[in-house]
Image (cartoon, rainbow, N blue to C red; front, side, top):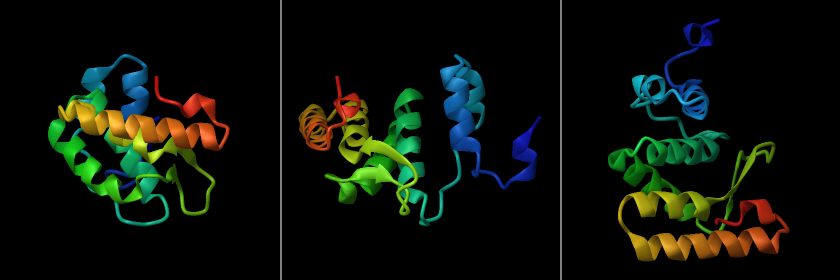
Length: 130
């Protein structure tokens, strides 16, 4: 079943690329890359964090830098949809990973520490970066 045929490019591509990477199909995920920009709507923050994770996993410094810049104003917050239905952990966890890919070790450490502090403060040890 090709759900992508039912939706405009970009709607399912982030989720599909993640699933392909999780299944070990890096070539399949790369075939979807780059994914078109996502509109700033109620899911933008979640989609941007997911895309940042994909950029790190696919070792794409250009997309990682763009996502990093977009996520910076959200440092100290949780990645979530505006209605709170989706929550993916501290924004700083995603910023730490993009900073590491970009060779910004000090920034990566700072964001990793901030992500861990927020995760511990809200009682979510599974979001403490390792």
